[in-house]
Structures are given as C-alpha cells and as structure tokens.
Length: 614
Ligand code: G6P
Image (cartoon, rainbow, N blue to C red; front, side):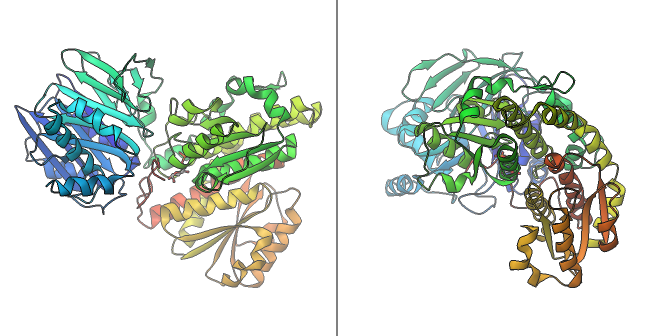
C-alpha cells in the first residue's frame, strides 16, 4: 500500500527510480511522483494515475540528479489527484518527503501548523510531516535529519519515510515504523531504498531491513548509519538477498496473474522441498519445530488473516480439526483486534499473510502476543514484518507474487497448512500410519495434478467467454470446498468487477436462491467425497430455477455431467486436498473473464497488494 523508492550515489537516479516504481506499482497506482536533487535545485514532478503518466509528464523536464526519491500511491487521505501525489515539499521548497503509512494524529498537528502560518497544498496526512520537519529546523536550528527524529517523537501512526533536502544535497534520511523499508547497499558506494527488495535486486544482494523506530542517515561521504528515534546508534544487520530477477518478470505470459497461476505446480513443489518425503514417510516444518509440542498440546488455535489469506485459513480449519482434532477459530484480523479477544494459556495464534505486512494482521498478532499467546506466521515475503515479530513460522516459498489478486500464494498457504496439519496429526496420533502414508503420497502428486488442471485452460477460456457479460455470479461448495467457493467469488469480483458471492451450497436455499434465474451463472465444486450427493441436490435446485451450472467435478464423473451446463474435470485426489486443485479453474475463469471484459487484471481498480493501513 503505497510504494517508495529512493537512490543516492553516482548514477543517474531517475531511471532507477522509475524502474523501481514500476516494480512497486502493485502496492498502489493512484498517482506517482519523483523528486530529484540536481545542481542545488530540487525538481519535483508528480501526476495522477500510473507511473506511465508520470513518465510522459516528465519526458520534457529536467530529470538529472544522483539523489532522488519516488512514490506510487494508494490513496488514504485525500483523493487520488496531482496535488495529493507524493513527494510533498516544504513551503520554502527545500525539503521533499515520501511516505507510506498513516499519520494518525495528523489533524492535531495540522491545526497547530496552520495556526503558525503554514499553508497546506494537499489533503494528505503526509504533508504534515514535511512542515513539521521544516518548523523544527527553524525553531531548533538543527539539520533536517535531526528535525525528522524530533518530529517523529510527536507522531502516532505508521510510516516508512524518506526525506531529502537542498541544504544537504549529499544526504538522504529514512525512517520506519510498521511500514516496510529495505536498504540495498550498492557496489559503488551507492544505496537503494525501497518498500520491498524488488527494485533493489538487480543492483545488489546486500540488504538491511530497517526495524521499527529506526532512522537511517545515508551520506555519500560517510555511508550509512542507523539510529533509533531516541538517538541511540544501532548496528545495521546486513542480509543476503535471495531473490531472482527473473521472478519479477512476466516470462512470456501476457499478465503476471496468468504466469503466477501457471507457476503453481512449481510453487507447491517448492513448498514441499525439505519438508515432505512420502517415500520415507515423514513431514517436517523446520521453522516451527520448537513449537511443535505446544501445537500438539494446543486446546485451541486461532488463525488470523485478511482477504485471500483468510480463505486459506478456512481451509486450514477443516484440515486441523479433521486430521489433528484441534479446535480452530478463524478470525478476520481487523475484527479480532478490536474485540477484546479471549486468549487462554496454551492458545496458539497463527497469522497467514502473503506480504507479511498487512496492518490488521500485524496488529492482531501484536495483541495476541501481548496477551501471552504463542504467535506463529505463515508468510510468503522473506524478512517481512510479520515474519520478524512472530515466535516462529514457515515461509510459503511461492516466490514474488506481483498480480494484485492472489493465486499461487493462496495454494502455497494451503500447502503449508496441510503439511502442518499432517505433521501434528501424525505426531499426536490422531491419524494412523497407513492413512498418513497414503495422504503424503497423495500430497506429493498434487503438483502434477495441478499441471493437469492447467491443461484445461482452453476449455475454461471458452466457458469464460459465455459468462463474461454476467452481472452476478454465485459460487457454491461444501466442507473445505466452501472456502474455495469464497475464493472463487473474491477472484471474480476483484479483477472483473462482476458481483459474486460465495456460499456453503446448502445455505443457498436460505437466501441466494431468490436471485437465481436464467442469467445467473452458478459455479459449484461438486467433486467426489462426503457431500457429493448433497451438492448434486443443490445443483438440481439451481437447475429447477433455470440457473446456469458450471461444475468442477472429479475426472470421469457422469452424474453431474447430465445436469450441468458445463463441467471442468479435475484429477481424483484425497478429499482434504481438493482445495489445492479446485481453486485453479476458478482462478483461470476469473482471469479470462476479466481479460475479455478489458479489465486490468494485474492492477484492478482501487485495490493494492499490500495493505499497510487499517
Ligand atoms: C489485499 C490483497 C489480497 C490479499 C489481502 C491480504 O487485499 O489485494 O490479495 O489477500 O490483502 O494480504 P496478505 O499479504 O496479508 O496476505
């Protein structure tokens, strides 16, 4: 949610900043802007819309300079227009700032600054910071880095900030609290700062992930120094970046989303690596080994997440309860944190998050931690905030997910939760050896079976063409296919803007059935298993009202075929593993429908991939 990038060194900053913004555009694309220091001048350009608009706008401007900051915005305070775009500058034009996060007490600070004569040019919370720094500089006669530190003492909220000033054209200052900020240490005494490592990876693999309330001062002469806001010097912890540049490119696919859907056989396999061995009959999640016994003994596990990750938790709930006989509660992180939740001794809270930065999930975890819970994380982004505040965790290893609508991260989350449930069930003795071994063998086959599902792409595209003009859609499933239905509906509304609802199939008769007519496509997971016959009845109820049925069925199914308007076959597997296969046709259906409707599938309107505000 908002992407920031900055450069200081001997190279021209502008191309580095623009490329960086394009990499970070998934975090928001309401507006983009850049500020460059060049020959004593501070040149600032900003434009509503995507980075491409900024590039057009700046094409005939002076974009020289070896120090610069840039920003791509997801609007919170103030509508997405030119004046609210970052960077924001001080009244005298000396300072420029970019910010990701929210200044919660901005209104109090703003009032005070206005009363002292400061004139605001935007409606953002961020502009308060730049005037505050300016004000402190004037009042206390300190340089802008020290003024930023003092300013942050009176700020409540979340921030990743980078500031430059005409007064010190060889210096860049950054600060972070609750919003991510990574510093790349270049090979030519240069430094790259960004919201995540994607704009940095092609220049260096040496990075420092800033911690909360840290301030980085980077100077062309003295290099980088870290302080906390109490003015104590900190030692930077330099880490090796494990990111491949190719992972950030489309690799011949038309969209990142399509590439990421097709990557799933690989990403699920990567998730297994070193953790699953069906031949030898073991499953082990090294990252949470120290807390394994607590998991085995747990009376209750609470899973917290948002969006697609919340759906993964719902699948996890079925797996943990059925296989490991652990009571699980799945909570929207945003609700959990404001509800004075009951946390008992021995409770374990698991946060599931692709980005590892979602503000509500972070806050829910911090709350659970403060109440004495053991907190575990399942994250995709290595080094992310959630992965750093948890007691332990498991990475999903899906690789960077750039498409805003989550696909491969979801199946990777479900994979980790499956491995966890199996490991606990086996050790706890709630699953016998034969069943355990059979499940491991089935699980190991999943990547190849996902490959088979993907071979249906052309068939799925033809179905998409028939329903692309629908205005509503219903998704139905039972058991662990209910979250698959929720996820199918979310994917469709996110990227094609068709209104869609996911429902437990049996609940349809308590409301949604009233919506069914010949124009309503109903997408149903009707695979073989415990609820098969029940779902068949639900399909008949839809057909009796002339609804259109698009059913996901087990290969070779004959019964549903006779009733459905379309079927999409998936390979047979253990019932517990169906979500890993049944999700994929829904991803492809949404993708094709959105493309046919002319929507921007990788960057749907109003959404952002990493939601770092409440
Ligand atoms: C945003 C994204 C979703 C994601 C959700 C939770 O809404 O657009 O794709 O599922 O945030 O994000 P997380 O990174 O915590 O999984």
